[in-house]
Length: 206
Image (cartoon, rainbow, N blue to C red; front, top):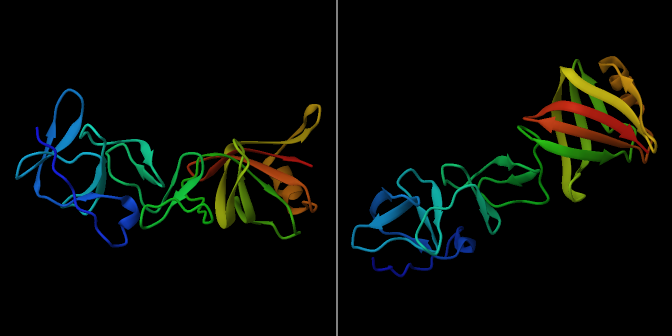
């Protein structure tokens, strides 16, 4: 099949490089999905906005990319560019789909993260919901994900404990965790393991 040269577009999507703008139809073979253009050829190494207004990306061989980052943009399992959501590991993408390292939203968050207390009102409680205010760090690479102010739910199965240099010092009840978190000293760290916005486990260290 003949490849079609795609035009460059100056718009809010300029950073997405070349964009395929021709009408056509979706096709699928033993390798994956590709887009057949009405005039012949196919989209390759380019972005494409379908009639559903969703953005897709095709690799150099013309196949749709899925579950992969293309620059600062993430393509989901269905191939559509993700928007307004947290991608696994704590990467927030905005309404335009671009990863924003300085903005964070914990809704639906999954991963391990921590806060270092720099003031007394860093955490507050409303029933079994924890209100966190401060800078969030991703544990895997210590990346500062920016300032966040968000609510996280605590489940009955959540595990809480104190951690010392020698390991786990003591396990805490839910009420014990609430009490301890209300009295964080400056410089103390609150660690959180979160799944879909709910706390699985949490611990303290200094």
